[in-house]
Length: 308
Image 1 (cartoon, rainbow, N blue to C red):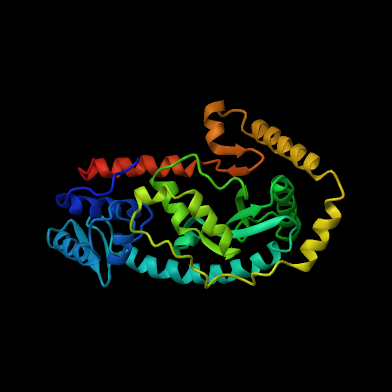
Image 2 (spheres, rainbow, N blue to C red):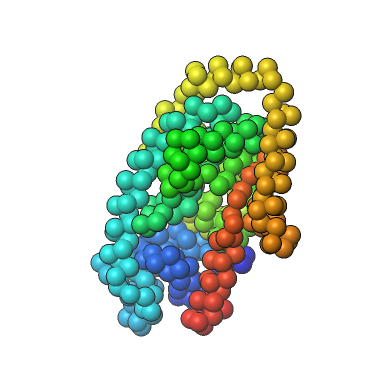
């Protein structure tokens, strides 16, 4: 999936179509500014992207509805859907800020991010609020267990408003799977608490610049809640650290590993390893391996468009 930037000028129409095709997988029409940001090259201006995009509209390879562009094979109704999804996303982001105020009280939490469709300000009717939780070192599995217990007790296990499938410690920011899907996830991640942690996350994953060289490096802070740490959190951490917390963390990690191995024992080992990451610094749970599915569908769409 790795793409090269600084491609020859005559490939700009193809690059634009590839960019629009990726987001078409999510029924998401794009503005010219968005196309520019997600282009796999940095040797072009927004003006040139706008000019070539208009040329592709005239050639009926793209369609335009108001200020957004989409593939000619797509239904114009996705433009209406985009507006509805954006309105829904804004409401859900306000809920996410409220939930983040509670999460930051949890001992050993060091950062709260938003990922998934909501980080792109697009939320379908069935969308969850996907949180990425940053924890202090050697406390990840304790935090995961506490938040899972919180969800079971206070939200009756419902993940819609508290979906926490991805936890990392301050030492676990580097991503092993490096492709277009993960690059877009990194650069669109939004911060609710601790912008410095998000800045470090992006710095460690600076490889994304090779795939998305035009993406802005600025950190959006309009969603950030109070930056101050909770006095309650500090007090509880002080008391908990009197216990053998590293031992508890290791035991909880092994418990989760055993649980997932048992629950998904019918899945081949190599496939299960892509569905779950279980380590002292990373906990990830992707039973459907959405990343693999999206990249596969993307390749099929490029092939259908003759863009391989």
